[in-house]
Amino acid sequence: MSEKILAVVTGPTASGKTALAIALAQHYNTEIVSADSRQLFADLPIGTAAPTAEERRLARHHLCGVLPLDAYYSASRFEEDALPILDAIWTQHPVAIVCGGSMMYVDTLIRGIDDMPTITDATRKYVLELLENHGLNGVLAQLEICDPDYYAIVDKNNTRRVVHALEVSLQAGVPYSTLRTGQSKKRPFKVVEMAIDMPREQLFSRISARVEAMFDAGLEKEARRAFAQGDFNALNTVGYKELHPYFAGLVSLEDTKAKIARNTRVYAKKQITWLRRNPNIHWLNPETATDEAISLIDKAIME
Image (tube, rainbow, N blue to C red; front, side):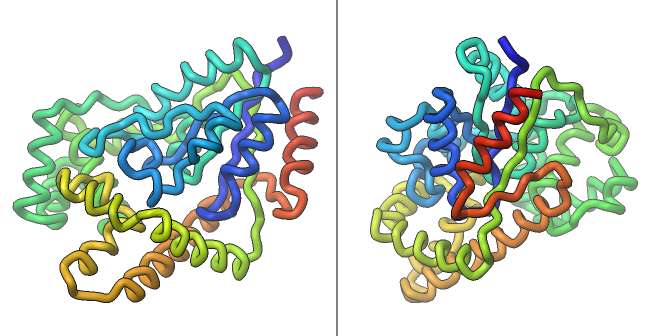
């Protein structure tokens, strides 16, 4: 068999990743691994724009809707789960597709992640209680004691990153910063990274249309059912967190929709900024994306 090819379809939300990934999977008779940190959860198909039943019939998807809302997940867990799935796909097909906009997941899969200790339930519970009782400032205060070097550079508004650093420092018994090597792992496959270069006005229009479509499909009911299970981290995401004030009767439905669309646009801009820093990304014209992607993958197969 020729060298294994990993075709990565990434890009900002609502740019058409799923449709492109399915077209490629059908062309190469292969399967798709989702790299979306929220589509992993089984109870959030509408708000996360997870592949529909029809889309899954068109191409097999892995790591979609496989977790309960209270499950803990991370980029390192994704690496552990995705690599064996890809190996299984490659036993049947020379090309495997990864599709998603969770940039840390994609980056970890391609370049690896530093080896970190497994966080025990006790450590996770301790840090979570610290966060709940003393807020993010309480977690930051302890991180400054445990790892002053990382404390000096961390985004102090990024709760997940701060919590993770403290968990690792406490679990390992050494500062988190001493475990971060920043070195890429050697992967036994060739990578083709692609993103759809959609004009910003068109992308924003698609985001607004998607928000309306999600509500038409039952997002409000989906969110109410999810919140009834508990206030989980999986729900601290665009499309769900904005519904809290609406459910409390504090804002109108139209204002809620507008806020979700606005926050989704902000998220999309952050995704684009991340991707623009990556020189390996091939930017595809949305009108000819499938043909361009096939040409890139075929070239990688022939090299």
